Length: 77
Image (cartoon, rainbow, N blue to C red; front, side, top):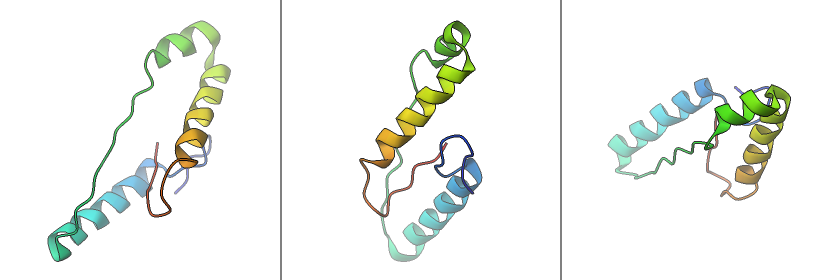
């Protein structure tokens, strides 16, 4: 359920969590939000500097997001 590179939730975990949140919305009228983030020019970074640096950037972005969320929030890749 974790992404091997970034150590955050993977897509399968995200889809399970999203279904759970939608069910809770319908059952308890419990609202939630979704934020989708795109790293600008990421393909250019990979193409210019290589996938090793691209991987490091992904890990840095994940670490930054993890350090700035509430305990019940979910970050996934």
